[in-house]
Image (cartoon, rainbow, N blue to C red; front, top):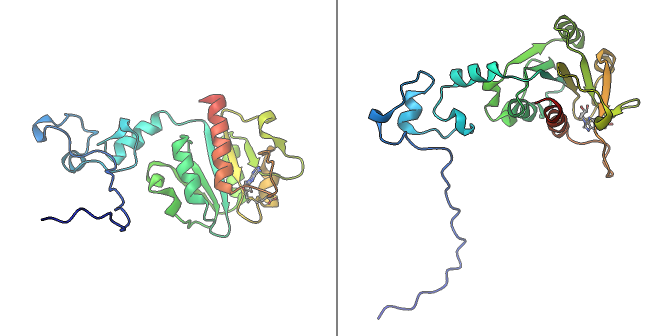
Amino acid sequence: MTPPEQPSHAEPAEPVLPVGVGPWPGGREEWPDDPRYDPELLADGDRRNVVDRYRYWTMDAIVADLDERRHGFHVAIENWQHDMNIGSIVRSANAFLAAEVHIIGKRRWNRRGAMVTDRYQHVRHHETVEAFAEWAAAASLPIIAIDNVEGSVALPAADLPEACVLLFGQEGPGLSPDALAAASATVEIEQYGSTRSINASAAAAVVMYEWCRRWA
Ligand SMILES: C[S@@+](CC[C@H](N)C(=O)[O-])C[C@H]1O[C@@H](n2cnc3c(N)ncnc32)[C@H](O)[C@@H]1O
C-alpha cells in the first residue's frame, strides 16, 4: 500500500520564467528576408531586454532606427567621484530616447546599472565643465541644471526647451559651482518628506519623463 502524500516543508522552487522569445517559429525556411534581422538571434532566440519592435534585430540596426527618431534633449552628469548613478541614468536616457549622454570629468564610469543600454546610446566625454559648456554653446543647446539649490525653479513651472541639455550632479556634493554657473536655468523637483534630496538617477528619470510629457 502506498503511504498518503505528506505535505512538503521544503521551500517551493522559484519558477524559471523565460525572458524574451525563442527561435523564430517555423525554422530557417521561415526566416524573414531583411538585413536588420540577426541570424544568430533567429536561430537561438532573443533573450535581450528590448521592446518587441526590435526582437531579433542586430544591435546596429536598432541603433540606426533609434537615431532616426531621437528626442531633442541631451543628458549630462558630472563624474568626479565615479558616481554609481551614471549607469542608471544611461538606462533611463535610452528609455526616454535622449539624443546623447554626456559624462563630465572622469572618463571611466560604472556601467553596471546601464544593463547594456549604453550600447544603444551615444555617450560623449568632456574633461571639464568648461569644455562641456563650449560644446553646448557650439550646438546652440541651453544647459538646464537640475538641482535643489537656492534660486531653483520648481519643475512644473520651469521652462524645459525642446532642444536642451539636462545637467545632473553627483551624490553628495550635487552640481559643482562651475556647472551651476554654466547653466541658463536651475530646476528643482519638489519634495515633501524629510530627506534633502532624491537619488540622482531618480531625479534624472523624473525630469526626462517630464520633458517627454511636454514634447514627445
Ligand atoms: C543627492 S543630490 C545632492 C545635492 C543636493 N543639492 C542636496 O542639497 O543634498 C545629487 C543630484 O541629484 C539631483 N537631485 C536630487 N534631488 C533633487 C531635487 N529634489 N531636485 C532636483 N535635482 C535633484 C541633482 O542633480 C543633484 O545634483
